[in-house]
Length: 368
View 1: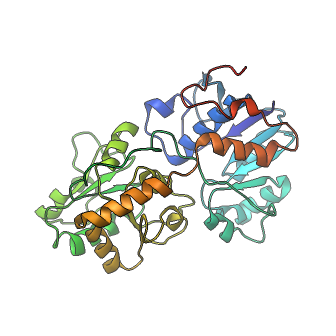
View 2: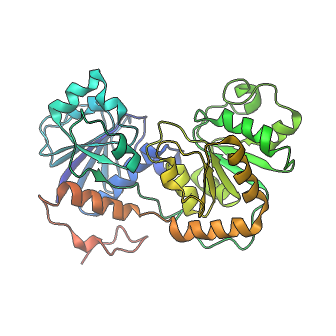
View 3: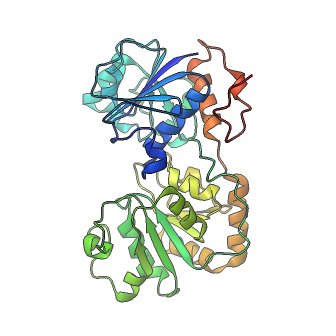
């Protein structure tokens, strides 16, 4: 099969970190795609800012600070045009656009993009719609929505509604302060017993209170005792802990951010059956079926009203909870890898159909 190289410089990680450390959407997506491509019998090597070589789930992980590879069948640069030159002479070069594509047309990057002309792989209609006409493009564009891992897919509906708990599960720099302001002004006065649990990867020192660290920056300044008790910022959670927290929430609330190119946290919450109230910003509304599995609301008053409704109306919550489980399971990472392979390799290598029907949990079983 094909020799595939992937390069990513978002942070220091390797494949083993998926089970041992909290990761962002980019890093976890790289690991999951690499594993699935290796399961399809491709020879996969991933170069990151890791410190030592590692082999994990059939994938070779290498420090990107080492020697540049000479060639491969497919080279995938993650997001950054500066990575396009990393493999000297690949037979095919692609750029996996996991963030907004606007930076690709920056005057410092545009020359690199046109020189190498990588095949772009996009994740959302939002990315397709804002793709600049000055950039090289595929016609039609390759659009594959990110896969969802099996630990959030296929859950049974909850027997009873959770208590009045909302959850925020994203980078706290992505409009957490404004969300808390809406909560304080429009939700908490009507639901004094409601709780907003805030999860995400952050670096608050152990033993420090988030309100003391973030007050006036990522959180409002001078909170009332009631607000301080209602909005609870949790330490960075394990994946299992975050899934448990999501399943225990009645609604996910998120104002979105202009940089969202897919919004994996909302997609995973929806797959778990959590209704969501989101602002229609960037790719975020693509993750929620408006009026069916949640709501798109730009107006703060309407945003608060929808949140209150899902926190208090058991019948509404039940309809949207079960609709999310029914309609928002997304595609598996196995299917994502199959589409990725078909889009970028099918004209050069036959698809290995022996791996298409491997049941979950038997990925390492040799095919007959």
